[in-house]
Structures are given as structure tokens and as C-alpha cells.
Image (cartoon, rainbow, N blue to C red; front, top):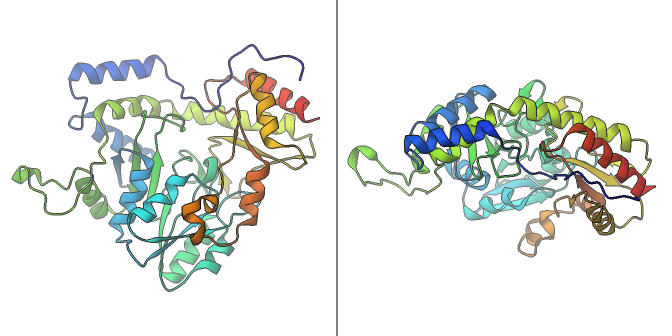
Amino acid sequence: MDTKISTKIYLDDPSLGEIEKEYLIKCIDSTYVSIIGPFVPEFEKKFADYLNVKKAVSTQSGTSAIHMALYELGIGPDDEVIVPALTFIATVNPILYTGAKPVIVDVNQKTWNISPEEIRKAITPKTKAIIPVHLYGNPCEMDEILDIAKEYNLYVIEDATESLGAKYKSKYTGTFGDFGCFSFNGNKVITTGGGGMIVTNNVQKAEHIKFLVNQARDNKKGYYHPELGFNYRMTNIEAALGLAQLSRLKGFLEKKRKFNETYRNVLGELKIIEFQEEHNSAKSSWWLNCIKINSDTDIARVITTLNKNGIPTRRVFMPINEMPYLKEYSRPCPNAIKIYNKGLCLPSSTMNDLDTIERVAEDIKCSLN
């Protein structure tokens, strides 16, 4: 690579503009910037409508969404919950919050998602739930996972925190299991700055979660709390930002798919490059475009070289079974380790334009030749 790209390149930065300013000003002018006001319920309804589910409940993060889903399903001490090795740590920590035991299994070497075969091998009489993660926006094999769950009477909580807008067999991720959990962190498909959402078709459970995230306060009796609650509420100012971003979601997804096509067109010529693959019934949101470099090339050195030339990249998630406090909960995960050792996440922010992504792909190609 001979020259540094002059245009600023964004890895996973949020795209914010005039419409976001308009919504935020509207929220500030209303004075409803905290937990009470019209923006949160509007965001919840529009989010549920987009996914075609009955209820959506906003939370303070994707982590708290997963925690509340587990809590609502009664997952607790002596229970086991199966999770993939290749995911962000927020998938597994809420299991420990409940006192339950995570069971970490390997992933499919092509899709990088949890392997249904490994799920089946890991089931014991203590298994209560499966948390499939649609990694980097790529949908899991939900038919097989749901069949296993039905066979063993297990709950399914989808970690869809990275996959808003992705589909499996024409149905959105997050809408297959008992609950779907989403994140609106600053680098996600859409952002509220922070925040998350739980979606479900179980209206009764959704209403109970809505009650729990507000400190389990019975407003009819003032400051009366009949059960343990949580301070997991989204604010109206966050929801206002979410409404603005939701109005732009279609454009974000179209852009990300074009980015993926561009990377494949340019880098697909290299025999050493292997892309994270969609299941044949899935359509990824391509939150992040990721590759595996099947050579002796040192990934850390590639990252350093590209960064010097203005191209930000990052490693794929370190497998969670490599964390010291989680090693005891893991089964062998060779595929996850191989993907981590050779995996690289490429610039995917919708702040980039298509020409920039094409130049990035060409420069990455040159650096690997």
C-alpha cells in the first residue's frame, strides 16, 4: 500500500444529521427528557410495528434486555443456558447475574454462528434456554434451533443486538424466540446513544417486564413496590434519537448491503480471503463486514498497517471461553478460536460512501498480495 487514503474512514460510527437534531430539539422543547413523556411509548410502538410483533419494551441497554428476558422466564440458580463462544461478553454476563450457569459451545465455521449440532450435544436435564446470537448481523439457523428447543422444552432468547433488519426466511431476527433483544449502542445499526429493546408476542410477559424495568413501582399506590424491580428504563431523549434513526433504517440497511457486495467483488479474488457467510435462508444486516484471512499473515500486523494508512479495523470478538472467569463453563470451541485468530472486521459505518469502501477494499487487497 503506497499512499494513505485522504478521506476519513469510519469503522462503525453512527450516522447522525439534521433529522436527529430535529427530534432531539422537539424532545428538549417538550421538557420530557427523562423517563416520562411521549417519545418512549412512540418508539416502542414503531419498533414493534417494524418487526411485526405485538409488544416492544425499551431498556437501558442490550445487556439489560437480555437480563430481563432471562429474569422474566425464571432462569436462576442450577439452570443452564447455552450460548455461542463467538459473541460479545454482554451475551453471557446476564446469565451469571441470574445465578444460572452459561454453557459455551462452538460455532459454525462458515456462518460464525452457534452450531445447532453443538447445542444438541450440550443439553442436560438442567438446560433451560438457548441464546442464539445473530453475529455481526448474520442470522442463525433458526429452524433447527427452534426444533431443538421444542424437542427439549427450552426457551429461546435471541440476541439480535447486532442484527436489526436482518431476516431469516422473510421474518426479522428477534421475532422467532420467546424474546428478542436489541441494542442501540452508539455503533449499532441504529443508535439511541445507549439503550436496548425487548420484543415478544407474549403481551402479558411484556407488560410485566415494563413494570419491572421501572423499579417494579405500582404508580396507583405512589412509591409502592410489590416485588424486586430494576432501573432499566430508557429516557425520552434517547427514544427521540431512536425515532429519528428508525426513520432512516431502510437506507442504512441498503447501504450496508452494498458495502458487503463491494468487499466481496474486490476481495473475493484473493484465495486467502474467506467471508462470513449467510445461511441459505438468511439475509444479513451486515452490521459489520468481516473476513477471515487464511494465511500465515499476522492479524495484529495487518491492523497496524491498515491503521497507519487511515483504514480502521478491529479483531473479531475474542471467544468468551477465553475469559478467565468463564473457562469452567466452556466446551471445546476450535472453530471460534480459528475465526478469532484470523478474523478481521472492516469499515462498515454508513458514514462512509460507496466509493470510499471500494478504495478501502482495493487497499486491503494490495496489502494482502
